[in-house]
Image 1 (tube, rainbow, N blue to C red):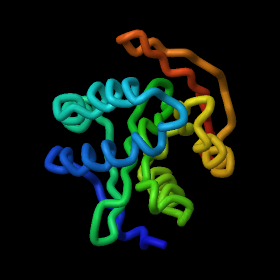
Image 2 (image 1 turned 180 degrees about the horizontal axis):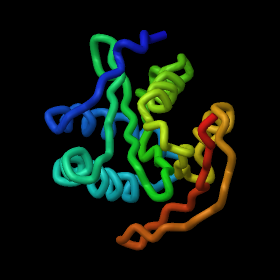
Image 3 (image 1 turned 180 degrees about the vertical axis):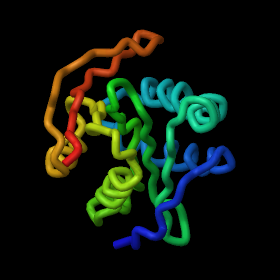
Image 4 (image 1 turned 90 degrees about the horizontal axis):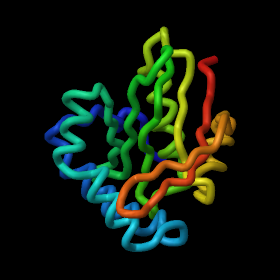
Length: 165
């Protein structure tokens, strides 16, 4: 188990760490859900240096890293509409899953949300086992959506929601 004091805010200087984690985690996490080509397309689309820098410096998306001598995972969240916030990303090294790191990242995010925040939403692939983690953490399926992401690919997701307690 990792101590929560090892969760820190990431800056634009941490983009190579976020990219390295993504390129390590995604192929394993999505191997049975997405084609190799779609994984490669999405990684290049979502984790380019330009996209990450824009999210961190212009869009108000906060990235957190969890570390224990080496980076183990990351999360990203930001405001949406009507005082709602969105969990954009939560990924933990596939060799370090199910030891509480995802829970620690999520719990840290809740402590950082402004008091005006009414709750947290997220998208998760309908076939991703991570949805069970989110349900265990108190999220409920709010709706379903299919998003065209280009190159003939779609994201077929549940939209999940947890109100602030």
